[in-house]
Image (cartoon, rainbow over the protein chains, first blue to last red):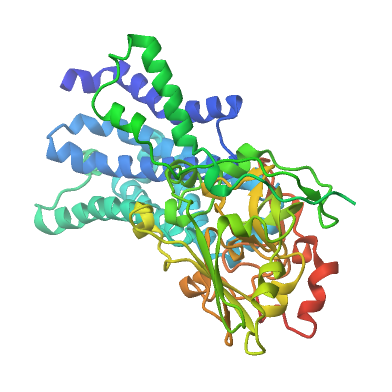
Length: 216
Length: 321
């Protein structure tokens, strides 16, 4: 198990699997499989995948503790970047087809429409996380601070679900499913924080070791 | 002048698509394995198909209408596969899949309330109340997409006049068919059912308001509101009620489904109006399906202002949205 998790090939495979949703959309686009309202289809599909990747990213930490496979963390950055990638596609489709690059229209939407306000905020919060996802930025920020910055993903998860919830007209069962999943993932963290021995995140621990060595 | 004639074929004579398909299956079965391939439930299905679902029949002859737009008609596949019919599921692709077995025959529409001649009409009668016209209307959904559909029917005022409404009849209330057994997803709809709608009497009497029994030359597909619906082209799509079982003349403004669900977002009037945004999105533009870009400007009253604007003289349409 451990050798599978640490293999560089596994990472390549996971990367390709993460591209499958995009591949399916491109295939549907080329073959006319996007249905009667293709823009809405693309918006919904990319929105769904953004939320799913946020949830998958958030599940890494609980999962690696539950099944005692710390190596799982190797995939966290890539999965988080895919959440950002699908969020970027989602916003780009809205920008291109829905607003047809009408920047004033977009700004009016963001300012006036609360479901867009929260969705856009959730997306924007992912930008610094994507930028600072490199090893260099972990070093520059320091592990503890880096980990703190990256807790913004919790806000993205909550805002993403609210965005979905406020968007639907009456049938809220799917947004509620996402809400339940996010609640479990975030609830686990609250529980772990209260119940468990005080743990520092892996990256912060690494950094702490280094700094303590340096300051000795 | 076109010769106007009503169809000879009765609505109840139509071969249901199920039965038709099953006959095919039967023949295929015989060919494939000398009848041995047929077993168990399959046999039961073939010999006793449900007799009343998914009928599709050509409607002839059709008079043309001066109300028709010359804009490009949307492909029927789009109109038949992209539906808001929450009783059959809230996703656009669900009604076309879930309504295939919806039983629409026999069907009766009860016309009642404040009128001299209340009565029940069978579908056969409804098809013959007036010569059928093809009316190509723009259809603008409140969700900012639009289609152009060649509907078939006649002015709603035909059936209203026959009922001889009395002076108390200030509004017309409509009710859709509702059956939890046939509509198992009803519980997820998130709206109160049966679906109800309403019009002011003068709106309902306006010749543009259509009592619709078909589209694209045929009877209505189930997901598009079979067997009979209204089409009110200057209002958002949800004002056009599907699968009507009751038309009632009432004194006071009747409750309407989306207004009950969210009064802040869906008013009683719900006239297409690019200047009054939905609280959650702009109504200034629309996407003409199956296109990608939301760059078609939405017109006041969906472009039917010349005909209907006078109905709302002196009304603040921001207040009465």
